[in-house]
Length: 348
Ligand code: SAH
Image (cartoon, rainbow, N blue to C red; front, side):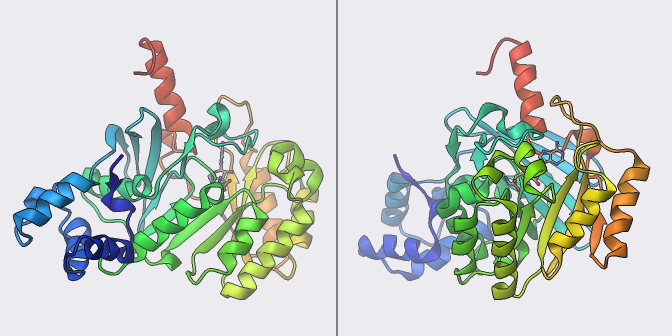
């Protein structure tokens, strides 16, 4: 199969031209044409000779996502894409006052099995290639006629379970000749794979880390997130602490509030103790009610939990609701879409 041009970092594209006895400078020009001028085919390039264009057409592919569905509200938009092999993924754009954030999927399906998350219902089918993540940005910008300034890897999948492709993606979009979205504008959200957090820590790039913690102890977390049986809370917090120290960054601690499960005052207090000495802020996420049956706590309970964090000197926010009318929670669009296809006679 042909290599996709959006899977090549600039140095790799330079190697590609050099290996074919072409001028290496063409790589920089091609990068600008792809990411700044957003050409849709190699034949649009008028500054390369015909021989080069033919070579590019023969050896590299350009285009591989199909936009299946687009839903927009004032502050958010959701896109559903089909990949070349028929799998579908979703991408969500969130409009902030500081710019547009895009929530990118990293896998088709997910193997982490968190009991409240719909993404894992179908298990991991495969990792996304780097170009399938890059193309989510380019297609979203085109479909919504906007530009993206921040990336969160919080769509379908566990980004650190697809480490190499995700790192390649970060390098490609960080290139100043290309999309120029610096790693410090990228947030990697993980359910807590310690070896990969360590690898990330030793990388030159300075991406932000978000940890889906969701519970203050092994007992509750273990019941919600199977990964906790491999990497328990204590070791995980040590890894996060070390990441924050080395990168000199605050880690975002994500905490879904699930009614009657992890939303008590005791849980809030235990969470405060756990976070002592860690540079972080907590993002409280009242759970999105899905087919999985978990309930969002009453407003008063959410406010109580939040208040306990603040009273104990923690920085915390209650997540702003984006596109709740759009079913924007992780995995929900795809779930809903597949249901619809089944209803009308199966996924084609
Ligand atoms: N696998 C990564 C990233 C994808 S999930 C991770 O675990 O962080 C992105 C975020 O959405 C995670 O914090 C996840 O726990 C959360 N999430 C999943 N289902 C949810 C639901 N029903 N309501 C609210 N947040 C949910």
